[in-house]
Image 1 (cartoon, rainbow, N blue to C red):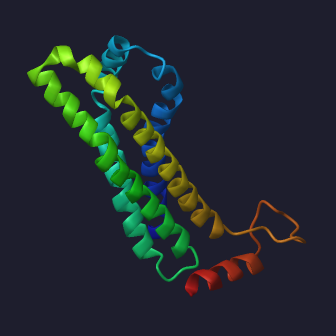
Image 2 (image 1 turned 45 degrees about the vertical axis):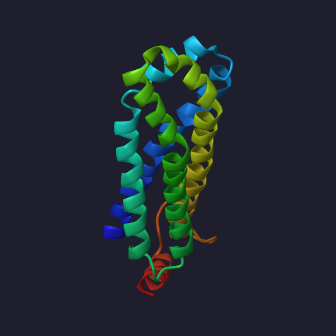
Length: 181
């Protein structure tokens, strides 16, 4: 039951982190058409709280996936869980290496030379936008791996069962034997 609960927490955090990145990807085609002033206005106002909320989701999902991988290390789902963890970790690494430096440069410019921010955003736009897109792909792969790891341990209904909505004693015994390993 503990593993089930931990899987739930991990999937929720990973899904919430994925929503943040998918929002960026959905906005990307329109934002790439914006001029310097519009792009700067959108990016310096719209994402003000993303760092706080997304940071909690991303770091939380990474920690939860790492703990989950440890918990299932002797199960058949370990490999998929580990892949999920590493993809989430890599997505955060991409953010740290590609996106965060842009955010830092813009924050510095806002303090020292606010009039330079629109052109700075325009110069760094590709790095910021495509860094977010790369993070999305990695998070999506990680989330899918985690979901597949859950589905692998979900009991199947065997043909010939009279009531497919109910798990037979034979099915229950097979599942228990699988989980006892």
